[in-house]
Length: 172
Image (cartoon, rainbow, N blue to C red):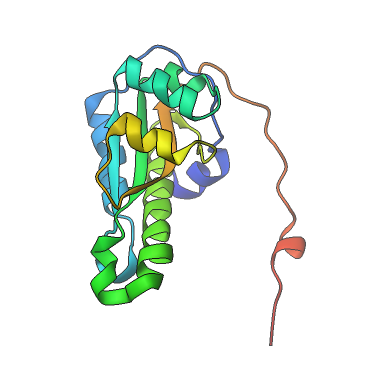
């Protein structure tokens, strides 16, 4: 798929079939995330690959009942790894750049999934402490995004976007 077609056709998918995501396609998604730019190329993020149904069901609970997390065959959990930035960028690297690194990597994964006909949706509404416990995350890592991925069971109606004239503010 053409890059700009990928961007304009990608949608947030909240219903998945039970078809598994092929390993080569999953690998492509993970490679795309790994190629995302990061502050100083410090790559201050980690990705947890969740396939276990019981863990996905626990993520549903941590995310306030968002059932599609268990329906998708895979959930990628993007976490910050602030210590990778601390020595170079201090507090700003720990609190901001690590979050930016994780979110950019997640965006690359979403686009790689969409380019292969695989759906996803960015989930930011969840209890961090519960996710930390479910995945037994190391101290210092912070879960930022849950990204369920799988084949769409349905395509939602397309939603409008803001006009560029409302969004872009030229300054001189």
